[in-house]
Amino acid sequence: MQDSLTCPNCGEIVVRYRNPFPTVDIIIRIGAGIVLIERRNPPYGWALPGGFVDYGESLEEAALREAREETGLDIVNLEQFRAYSDPGRDFRQHNISVVFTAEAHGVPHAGDDAERVRIFPLDQLPNPLCFDHTLILSDYGAGKKCRAGTSFSRPCL
Image (cartoon, rainbow, N blue to C red; front, side, top):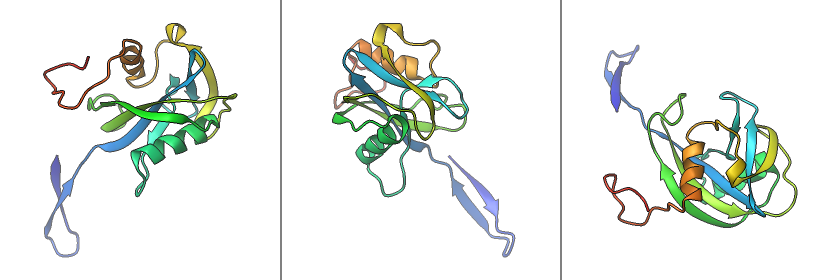
């Protein structure tokens, strides 16, 4: 999407492009549970740990950093699960999330954007979850992982 602005100095039209923001979310398994954070900032509520990818950072580096910042956990066995790109998934702006799965050991501790952190059994999640995290965890529980070549018109299996 693009729109234009007028330069206040020279009057030239400047094209401004609006692009989605890349984010990561991490499904962290500890034993038979999933780690969720209670958000410190709006929108308030329970969510997967995650956040924005910093400039110069890979998606994997962002996932490791966000997990450590929000839960205090060092995660292992990091794998891409799926990408979620519905423009309405976050009311603040259009974000695209690459979701990862990972494992961790130990006791999580809330930090950074997390007010609290807790381990929930997959069948006893708080409701509702922020953003589209209910859908993400439903897909995860159903084993729906996209494969290369999956198109928009053909749902993930």
